[in-house]
Amino acid sequence: MTAVSGRLIRGGLTAAIGRSGVALGAVLVNALIARLLSPEDTGLFLLALSIVTVAAVIADFGLGKTLLRVIPDAMVSDDTGRAMSHIRHVLIVGAITGVLVALLMISPVGVYLAGKLSHGDILGSLMPLIALWLIATLAISLLAETCRGFHHIGSAIFFGGALTGLGNIFIVGSLLAVAWLASVPVDLKDVLWLFILSGLLLVVLAFVRLRGRFKRWGEPVTGSLGALFIMAWPFWVSNAAMIMLVNAEIWILGYLRSPEEVAAFGLVARLAILVSFPLLIVNSVLPPLISELHASKDIDKMERMLRGAAGLTTIMSVVLFIVLLIFGEWVSELLFGSYYAGNWDILMILACGWLVHVWAGSGGFVLSMTDNQHTMMRISLVVGSITILLGIWLTSRYGALGMAIASTTGIIMQNVLMLLFIHKHIGIKIHAGLSGIKDIWREVSRRLSGQQGSAS
Image 1 (cartoon, rainbow, N blue to C red):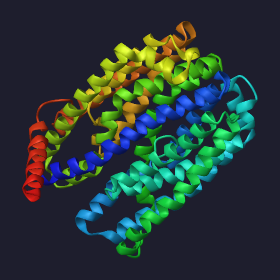
Image 2 (image 1 turned 180 degrees about the vertical axis):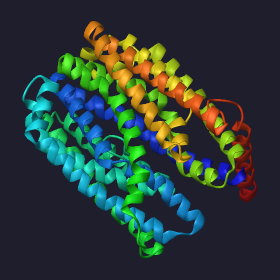
Image 3 (image 1 turned 90 degrees about the vertical axis):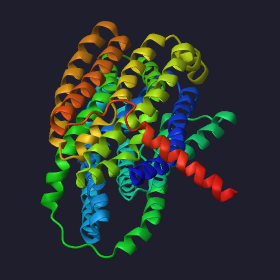
Image 4 (image 1 turned 60 degrees about the horizontal axis):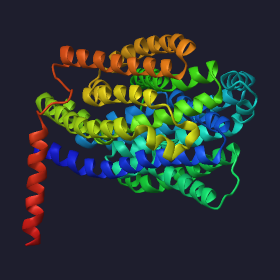
């Protein structure tokens, strides 16, 4: 397992630094937005971000996840022509679907739904900007997944998505910080333009980053669009259901409650999700490794790798959970302001769900990378539907607290079902365990000893 452990460690160190920056940077960007905008505009921004996130997954059509299967397989089999054809098809189809979804967003139907979601006309009037933000987000997300398929973990983390890429966070965060320190007035439209321009700049930089790899791999061979869609659509359905599960809370609150309550819940939710960031680090590295080990039928190594990674991330997540348990309310007030204090119960309910998610490991990627994406799709659809119905009922009765309970219930249900299926049909356990940690620790010790020997 030395080669796999070595790649996991090398990629993990890069991912740890990058994802830590993303997690902390995203919280700080949200804090700056909360300080610069009114509670109502902050709530509208969170709704806009949620719309872009969901629309990007719909427009992606599962194409990004197929890159994590095809590129590593091509690197193993040296079938670079097929991979280049696949990448080209993904980018072309992504451009078409992105434009179609953007047109739907600025249509009378899209504007009407945005108005119903926000109890006013402001969000609807901003739909052209939000649609442009979608196109930039989709483009950079597909290019980031291409980088991840090539195992360029640092580049994938830097480019990322709407508020998940280190580059976007750094550019937007720096400009917002200057505006806050200089007391420059900023409105919601200014914030949207910052994200759009930053995303377009990153698209250009990502193409420059990948150009050398594309030249080395040569010309693409003829590929099948039908095969692309057959591979992509289960990813699309499961990803759409999962992203709806995460973002439904904002939409349900937006429909049933005021934008101010959306802001209060949304900011606390982004603080709670920090508990899961150790797993995000590992998931930046694991998909190509899972695909390679599955292709080589090395199931035992895959199980040890997954359980070891889940064990390490759970230890780190427990520490973060305890920090929020003790200091969560104080941190929330410090970052976002006194208006957003007093939501400790919501924070901890959401944090509990994310802690279970980390303990359960990388179930979604295991299913996706082992030809079980149809199962992932069905689980996501069932759990997503139950969570949305439960969220509507509980939110109408208990407000944001009810939404937190529904969201956490859905996360736990999703992870339990994935664990049961993986254990029964793939024959492995992937939840946190000591198995595999020893291999990773042995590899770290070996590398540290080697570095010390070289230094002496």
